[in-house]
Image 1 (tube, rainbow, N blue to C red):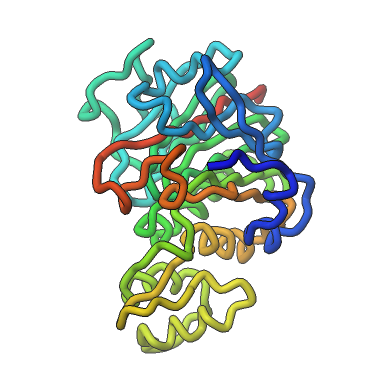
Image 2 (tube, rainbow, N blue to C red; image 1 turned 90 degrees about the vertical axis):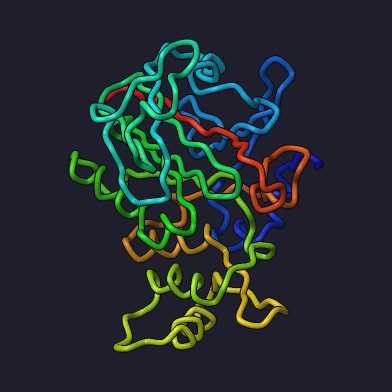
Length: 286
């Protein structure tokens, strides 16, 4: 994989859809290993880590950030539960405890400054969220099941419940499997896509897919296999946020595909192995 510069980033589909909002992605180095950061989150220590860091855990990865922070993670279950750090388990330092000790959820939102929240992924979408007024942050794991259950809007609502304003929230979607290579059944695509199309009484799978195809930035692409389509999960998340009033200047999407760039990312769809890359962010002053 060639590390993207600003010109190549501007050629990707997501840049063209979100428009020029002065957001750039940067490859950073730590002990010779690469991880990814986004300028939209420049005020928060954060990173989307590559498979080169495997099998390091969040308790070890937090050392990359120039911040002494409490570390939190969950046991991910492909749902839409978002917990506050007060209801989650703090990771033992420097290594994590056995996974069975962690609360089941797919998102974590901080309550105080200097808390690091983490999610892992291997094709699903890692989403880092920040409030530019309070410094509060969240980390969300949004696979197709979580996206169908609107986990990112659930996280947004969690911010609002703690006093955040929509205009202050930033959403950064990290490396994930790209729509052009993510083959799913028509039923799965309809289940996910139904979250962003107008409600139709007794709508069939065909009705939902047709509505999705009519969208200006459709998350559905054709597939040569019968009863299959290609699904862009990150684009569905963008559409969900748009419908809640989040502007394109508040979003960024990494121009990288876990499936197509094996030099840097694990992909469960490609390898069928339970290996992951971690994404994390540290909260600022509240």
